[in-house]
Amino acid sequence: MLSRDDLVDLYRKMRGEKVLSVYLNGGATDFAERNAWRRRLEHQVTYARRAVNGAPASEEEGFGRALGRIERALGAFDSFLPDQGWVGFATPDDLIYAEPVRAPMPDLVRWEGGIRVAPYVRALKQQRLVLAVLVDSRRARIFEYRSGELHEPKNLNAETFLGDLTDVNISKRATNHSGVRGKTGTDAAQRYLEVGSERMVKSLMEIATERLGHDGHLVLGGTSETLSAAAAHLPQQVLLRTVQRSSMGLEMTEAEVRTELEKAASELNQRLQKVLLDEVIDQARSGGRGALDPTEVEKALREARVDTLLVSRGFIRANPDYADHLVGSAFEQHAEVEELSGEGADRLDVEGEGVAARLRYVASG
Image 1 (cartoon, one colour):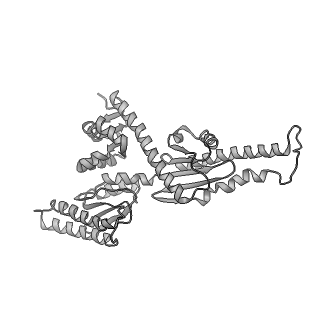
Image 2 (cartoon, helix red, strand yellow):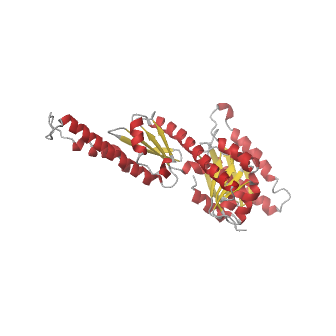
Image 3 (cartoon, helix red, strand yellow):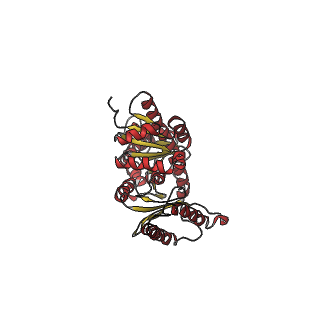
């Protein structure tokens, strides 16, 4: 999959060339739906051909050669596409990109100047790191989930680290006395465990904070007591991107962890989109660094004042060409782009006709 930077670079590189952009929805597994994606592709190709009807012969030839490259790339698949979606970009002389993606895509074929980028924004969320820390008072497991891949990094071997902080520091001799007046050996051992556990949780949260960067998501699993202790060691900006799951424990299988992480990531996306949209609407209504509705947003884009463009999924679906213009303009000025779904998208459709923006500054005058 393309990262955001890869997508922006490709958009800029290809804006002066004619490109065939192909998006296909995948994910079908029902036998009755086999080859359905091919029929949808044929329908979209028929629509795209209208753009070259009556054009010079060289234009029609270029379209045909680009389509041939796309069709050869898709020839690797039988009845079903391999993932939730598939994206391909081709010129008459080169297949620029052709890969499955981990997010549902619309069925869309366009022959135009530059690549079609708006639909791909949905897939960019899959690049966001989701870090899971499952912890109790003695042990921990850390998982990383990105682009549909789940693994336990060897360089974050928290379980060994916990052993170093607890068992190694406890006397291996059985005794009823600690040598400290007023304390039994059992009391001292318990205190060692408590101190080791506290140090372990603090160190884990430091590791997690560094690993997450500015946009990663954190899922904490364990007992309520352990979760509270872990959350107390997280900075506020990370807490906003954190969910706690007392139902998740150390003995979970990888398949169970994957399912929970996907649910948590969706929950966090909705939460963060709500915070962002609330901020933009408040700023727009108070005359601050916010813009609502396509007219105001496009004006801000022309003036290179957009920090983050917000577009609802419904707006992209209903206005694919205009939405792509807005997204491309945002990429031109290094702005972030967020596609809103669910309740956030519904609210954006009502408040801003499907489009809003957080601004870098307020225009003077």
